[in-house]
Length: 123
Image (cartoon, rainbow, N blue to C red):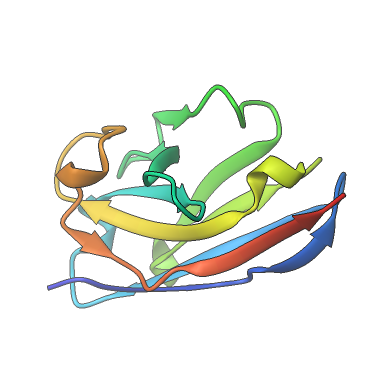
């Protein structure tokens, strides 16, 4: 089974930038859809971005479109979330997820998850 480990979270000021990383082991990474979700306290786990295994298709939540970019390096078994112009409402625990199928925005359809990394954006 695939194992995912996120890193790169931290505290940034509004308008700042941050890059999250997710390293994968134990699966055929190059054939998995990879995605990022986030969850704020008391909130549901919401879709952020996804990228298909062949990198031809990417998807973004409306709230982050134009500010966040997802990309992957299959040689390193790693997917990234590059975040810029961060806002306080971006504050959440960010989770990396994987599934052996086409991208979806539904968290329940991803089988593999990382432990999460905290992103805090101060105003």
